[in-house]
Amino acid sequence: MLILVWGCLAAKGQKTLKDALKGKFHIGVAMNGQQISERDTANVNIIKRNFDAIVAENCMKSMFLQPREGEFNFAEADKFVEFGERNGKWITGHCLTWHSQLPRWFFTDENGETVTADVLKARMKSHISTVVGHFKGKVKGWDVVNEAIMEDGSYRKSKFYEILGEEFIPLAFQYAHEADPDVELYYNDYNEWYPGKCAAIVKLIKTLRDRGLRIDAVGMQGHLGMDGPSIAEYEKAIQTYINAGVNVMVTEFDLSILPSPRRGIGAEISTNIEYQKEFNPYTEGVPDAAMQAWTNRMLDLFKLFLKYKEITRITMWGVSDGSSWKNNFPVRGRTDYPLLFDRNYQAKPVVEDIIKLANKRN
Ligand code: XIL
Image (spheres, rainbow, N blue to C red):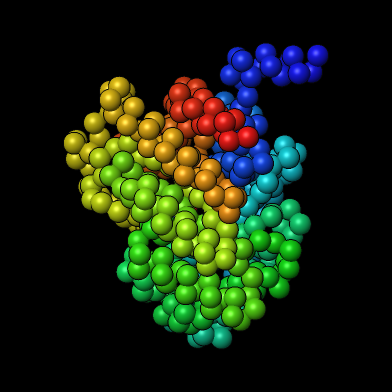
């Protein structure tokens, strides 16, 4: 009887993404404020049915968690975690150490001067231990450091780097591990398929491991476009990280269908390219050929992800196209189609393709 019911559901194509991908990797999604409060019921229903892992799109960033020194605000983040626990989702935390969306006080003292190395270490320690400690046992993995390395392999000249040098990264990993020895720890970044960046991250993994520090995975954000990287370039980077001894997670996946103002633009959130009409061609819908090319590339990427057992999570950066950050990045006010569900909250045809693909690999 049970088999019969299951058979009928599968025949109707009602097996959802998370059911099909079970045992392969976690299939996750980023949740925004409207979804965390469950006001956006259409997207919340999609999340419940299709994804088995969640991350907060914004509310766990330092400017929201510690807007003023010593004043932590966990209200929204707690709601997010409660949602995850209630619905049996695997919860990751994003992010502990990042130059963007950071409160203004973080690098300056009461006179407006840049803080000393010792003060910054103390602030990092306090932020990381408080946050990781607060969610201990609930959050399963943390993006400990986000976007610290440039495409050419040099370190980003952020305030963290200016004040502490390369050392700020091992310190962040150390503080996170001390606060919750069981939680997984990740280095997260965009454009990690650039050979220079990839080599620098491998070196970082070695440094952390040589010092006895924990790092479980490289998080490849995966804000991709139609113009590159090629599947081969992306695979090469994945293999390099796996060979360095860590797992790989695609942590912020979206595939923009829009013309990219330039190749490999990345995801530095302060980038803001001036609007031009030709950057926004699909306001009335996407022509079949363009849609097919998008579907093919999305499917090729999922084929790649299914090849490696060390790929343990793929997280979409948003539920459905209408609420994707890509509508406003890197150009404000465009109509993009980067996610697996459309503006009418319907699964795109590629979802069925991914489900079939996953079933074949069983
Ligand atoms: C983005 C969010 O999606 C936006 O809502 C917010 O305004 C800016 O940040 N890399 C990251 C994410 O690690 O945190 C960023 O998220 C996208 C780029």
